[in-house]
Image (cartoon, rainbow, N blue to C red; front, side, top):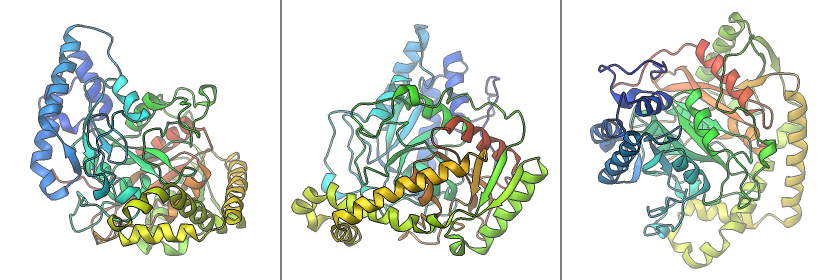
Length: 464
């Protein structure tokens, strides 16, 4: 699994622009080695070649993308101040509002919905010079009913969800980075299924204003790229307080120097955590996790096997109570008007949410806070946790996006996590590792993730 180009030298003519890292592509545009139009046309050619099979896009306008790129090139010629993502096309999950661009939420109810404003995360990326190449396929309301997207490694397998189109688009070389979301495992899991990097920042670091809510307590903006540095770069462009999001943290609390994922001065202290759902892991995932630990130990990591306190046995039930209760609250008005247009799967989730009492919901919120305190205390003894990101390879189906339970605890607690590929499974599809850090210790966590990713075996590359 090859990494994209990550040098500071100008790209050679032999390197197709779509193969570059996000940072290298942006640098090449700013320094005049490539034009934004060349970069964009390279991505569009890749889309023409591959997307008939992958189906990553819900909406895309090639002509508009080229026009955006040409305007970016005009600014380069004027030698004005350029943003860090100047001229870079990105994908945006289709639950995230984009001004003047359809945002269908994976549902026929919103087929013709065109927002009059963009989400905060989109505004910030555009302020940094990026532009929206298109909207990527999401599951229905970022829940469980799959969209049309296929896994780029093998179209008979799921790409994961709910950020299915974003993960597939980045893996296939359609864009350098894409926005997703995560309520349980909707960024981390599809990233590893598609063989790329997925990063879920700490809760409150990136505003969710303009992202269609599923669970207000659990929803996060997610980032999908091909390198850890690129994920940090995108996050640093979006981080910041936003009074329009009740979960947004103050600017003085934000992680410092988020985009600077400098090498560690010494090998990290790691806690290898199986988590309470270890029994659901496939044998291939267990073997890979053990092999990866051996490699990290030999590279110098101080690595201990750690069992989570017994309180974490309740984490999935706590998540479920919060998740379903908030679906019932957030989607009540929609269900009253359009219940015949939602899937049976979503209707069942909604009806299950109605069965939770206010007391049960409040009890779950209280247990969440206890879990967050316990996890923060455990993480104080280590630089990061390492754990599987999924049960194994992506399932060989298009009707199920995979089990999210290896991500659930970390999303519930709002801590930062990053996933990346570390090998291939029995069917030749990616599997990987997840690195988890302390709340708001995003930069430190990303540095550990990069250290681990640089030392673990990457055994194959996605076919061109």
